[in-house]
Image (cartoon, rainbow, N blue to C red; front, side, top):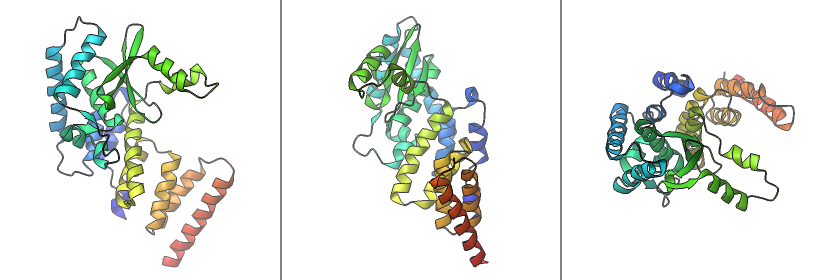
Amino acid sequence: MQFIETSVSEAFTSEVTRRESEINLARAGLIFAGSEYPQLDSAWYLNQLDLIANDISARLDPNANLSARLKVMNEYLFGELGYSGNVDDYYDPRNSYLNEVMDRRIGLPITLSIVFLELAERVGLEAKGVSFPGHFLVAVVEGDGDVIVDAFDGGAVLARATFLQRLIERAAPNTSLDALEAALRPASKSEILLRQLRNLKSIYVEQGLVEKSLNTINHMLVIQKDLLPELLERAALYDSLGYARGAVADYERAVSLLPPGPQLAEVHARIKRARDQAQKLH
């Protein structure tokens, strides 16, 4: 079971455990992709982002307003280069790998947003990821307001106030404005990476791809070690593989995070079963 325990590279661990301001989203995503594509050249893809940003910068008028600058960027990225959301095969795992997104110029809201965020930083736009439920977005800030950009929809732009008004109109009765505002809070880089990997993990779990599921979960738990759902999922996968030591370690960590109740009792029972199974094997 050594491959299970050591499948996360030192390069990925080093990247995602930096201070928030020092994490490079694209580099972290590409290092992760290297676990699926061993010949991947991260430096080449990072250079491609630099080249695209240079092309955008050459077309930008730095004195133009935000709307005009976003139009230039979006026309180049989503128009000339043809980046788009994969509406035909949304659950294709390739949509979650940054190298595949850049090669095929098609992806999910989260991965297309990562491309947008990386380019925005390079061309001098202040942009933040927004972990909106069900559909990742980007907020671009200028002056007293900001706009919401949907990278999955060709860079469609709405003023934040307009976006909020539409949310209010479609929200359940008695939904507070504070709750809607919270849904538009900026996401940290760690949260963005976790959301990207969680999408991929769900696909692999659904497809019954145990090794790929484990690889993705392992990377997630390096980013944040106390993700309860992932600890329980990994423990169950370890259990299914007969890897009792790993299962017990994850279950015990989950126990330290769970409140008293039926789920805690169930995890204690799983620990006992895993230990009993380990003794039978020896």
